[in-house]
Length: 213
Ligand code: CDP
Image (cartoon, helix red, strand yellow):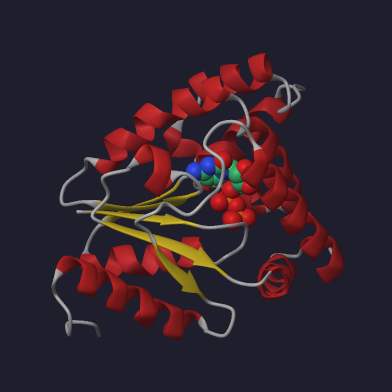
C-alpha cells in the first residue's frame, strides 16, 4: 500500500504523513529531507545549491542515514533545498531511492511535492494537503521559534511564498495536485482534526470506511 502526500511548504504534510504511517503500520519517508540534505552537503563543501554540478555531486554521494538531522529544518536550508530541487539530474538521482522506498513491505507513506505526479503515480491513495499561506507561516513560525531560530512571522511568510512560487514554476516536477488526489485544506483544522480527516479519506479510498480511530 502506497499513500502519496503532496503539498506546499509548511502545509503540515510531514506531521500528518508520520501519523498516518503509524496508524496503518507503514514506513514513512519525508522526501523534503532528501533535498534539504543535498543542500546541506553542497553548502558544507562550499558549493552553491543553484549550481547543478555541485548539487548533483551531493545527490550522488547522499547517505540516507544522514537524514535524521535537526540542522535540516532551518529556513535557510529549506530555501537552499528549493534551488537544489530545480535540477533535473538531481531529481533523477533521488528518484531511485524514493521508488525503492515505496516498494518496501508492507507499504509506505511518502510526502513531498511530486509524489502523486512523478514518483508514485500509481499510489493507492493521493492526498494534497494545503492551508492558507498565513496559517502555514503561523505554524512554521511556532515550530522554528520552539527550536530556537531567530525569525519573525513575516519573514517566514515571505520565505514560504517565495519557495512555493519557485516550486510551482520550475520546469521539472513542479508542485501541483495530481488529478486523482484528494484535496485536504487544513486552514481551519488542528492536527488531530486534520489527521481524522486524512484517515477518513484513506479508509474511503481503500474501501474500509468506518475504521477510523
Ligand atoms: O517542510 P517544508 O514543507 O517546508 O519543505 P520540505 O518538504 O522539507 O521541502 C523542502 C524543499 O525541497 C521544497 O521547497 C522543494 O523545493 C523541495 N522538494 C521537492 O522539490 N520535491 C519533493 N518531493 C520534496 C521537496
